[in-house]
Amino acid sequence: MPFPSFRKALWWSGPVAPAGRSWLLFYGGIRRMNGAKKSHESDYQRVVLKNSSPYHYMKVSLELEDESTKVSAVELKHFIITGLKSLFGEVGAALDFDVLKYSEDTRTAFLRVPSRGLVNLWSSLTLLGSYQSQACAFRVLQVSSFLLPLTGNSRELLLD
Amino acid sequence: MSVFMDLSVCSTPDRNHLRNLVEKAANLGFSTVAINYVFEPAAKSKQEIPTPAPMIDDLPLVQGRSRPIRVLNRLTIVMSDSSHFRPTAAEYRCFDLLAVQPTTEKLFHAACMSLDVDIIVIPVTEKLPFTFKRAPVNGAVDRGVVFEVSYSASIRDSTMRRYTIANANALMDTCKGKNVILSSQAEQPLELRGPYDIINLALLLGLSDGDAKEAVSSTCRAVLLHAESRKTASGIVYTVKTNTSGQQEAPPAAGDGEAPAAKRARPHLKE
Image (cartoon, rainbow over all chains, first blue to last red; front, top):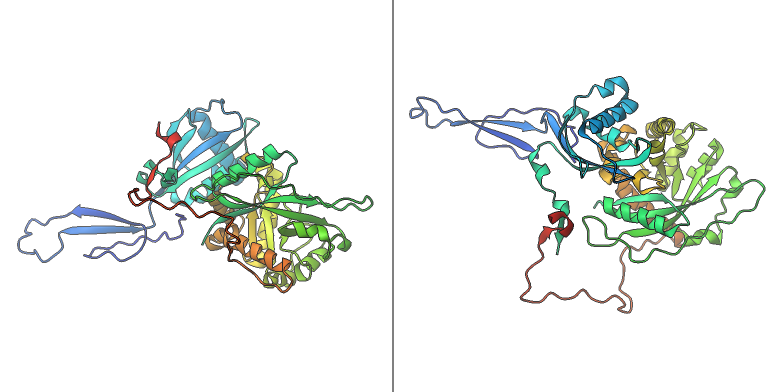
C-alpha cells in the first residue's frame, strides 16, 4: 500500500536507474548544440523521484442506506470536510484536497490529496458513519500516487 | 501470506441479517469472519451460555479469491468476578475462539497471566477502568494471547471514538504494537470497513505501518492457531487438511483443447 513513509527525493542523473520500487522517470531531451563532439556524454537528463509524488489520488464511493438519495458534488465535498473537522478539528479541515471528478448516479468520486494528508483524509473517510441521519459508508476502491492506475482495477476482473 | 480476517461481528438471531453481514465482509475482502456471542453473567440470575447457531449454507465467495468465506464462532465473556470464567465448562467447547473482557485490574492481570483464553477485549465504550501495566501485558504477549480493539463503536458515536483512540493509544504504549488485533464488532453491514481502511485507521490508533497490517492478517492467524492448540490436549497444531474418504470430488479436469484461464470483465461491470 502506498503509505507515504519515504518522502526523500532522489535526484539521479546517470545511465542506470537503481533498483527500487515506485520510480518516476522524466526523460528530458537536453540535447547539446555541439552534440557531435561530446557524443560520449549522455544525451538525456534523468530525474527520478522515489515515493515522493506530491499528490495521492483516491477513488471512493459513498454507500448509503437509502440508495435513492441524491448527493451532489458540493454536498459530497462538504460532507468530507465535516468528517475531517470532527476528527482533526479546524487544522485538519484546512487540508486542501480536491474532488476531481464525481459521478452522481454511482456516487463515485476521484479525490486528489497532498501525500502528507492521505492518512488523515483516509481515516476521516473511514470513520464517517452517517449522512443526514442515515447510515453510510465510504468504500475506498483504489489509492494511487498517480492518476493513471485509477482507470482500471484488476480486482474487478473475473478469473474464468 | 496475508489473508484478512475480522474476528468479531455481532451475532443476531435474524439469520438473514447475519447473512448480509457475512456477505458484505466477503465482498470487502475478508477471508475469515468470527461471529461473536456475548455472555455477561449477572450477579444473581443464572444465565445460559449462548449456543452457536448452525452455519449459514452456501457461503459467499471472498472478493479477489475463488474460495468461500470461512465463518467461525466466538464467545466473549464479560468478567466482573473471577468465578465467571469456568475453564472446564463443556459449553465453551463448541466455540472456535474464546475471549474475555475483564472489568477490573485484578481480572485483567488474571486474564493476561493465567486464564486459558485467546483474546482479551479492550473496552472501547467507556473510559479505561484501570491502567495497563507492563508485567501482565508482557506476560500475555509471551503466552500468545492477543488484545482486541474494535472500531465500529467509533463510527457510531464521537464520544466512543474518543474513548477508542485513548484506550487504544494507552494499550499501544504498553505493548508496543505487538499482539494487537483490530476487529469490527459490527451490527450493520454499513459499519464494516475494508481491510486497507482498517490498516490506515490503525495508524491513527498508534500502530506502525507493519504492525497495522499484521493486526488484520497474521496476528489474526496466530490467534486461530492458538485457539486450535488450546483445544487439543497436548497442544498439537494441525494445519494440513487431509481429504478423508474422498467426499470432496476432484475439480473437473480441463480438456486439452480448452483455452487457459484468463481474466475477463465481470458481467455486471461491462454494460
